[in-house]
Amino acid sequence: MQDLHTLINTSVNQLGYDLVDLEVSNRGKLLRVFIDKLTPADIKDTVNIDDCVLVSNQLGNLLSVEHEIDYDRLEVSSPGMDRVLKQEKDFIRFTGERATVKLRVPLTGLQGEKQVVKKNFVGILSGVEAGNLTLVCDDITYKLALTNIDKARLNPAF
Image 1 (cartoon, rainbow, N blue to C red):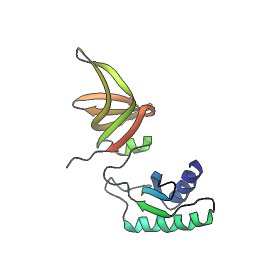
Image 2: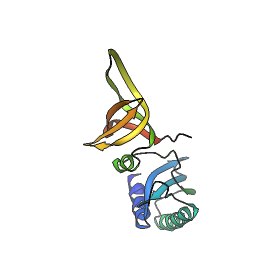
Image 3: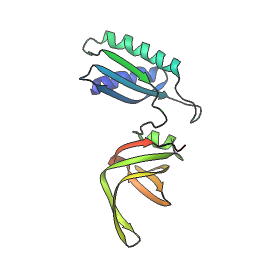
Image 4: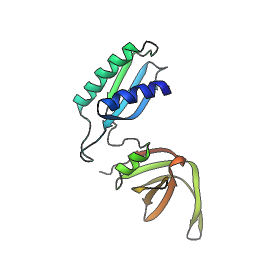
């Protein structure tokens, strides 16, 4: 899987896109590739259908040459409005946006006189410093170690 991830990431980067996520499902027969622009002009500069077609054609050609990679279907799409946040650069890029964060190990601490154990957060991303994500939830600022984040997604409010 790591070789496949590296192969796809390299190819996608050469085309000017960022590999956001790679899913292999249905016993390896379905490859889902989520891409974003490598250097977007702004937060609204998103992937369109032409970008997906370009990457899909390139990956289709690449994977047909790599004989050890067996798949039936390839899907290339944008990460969507509720995109996953995996790397430090994702948290930095989307500073100021609302996100849902789930920790591997719960955060334990005091809020006033009350002992709190919390694993799930919904708040505003406030930046990254020294390997810690700053997240503001209900006027409380949390410092969450990036290494302790299990899952994170943008959570746009409508």
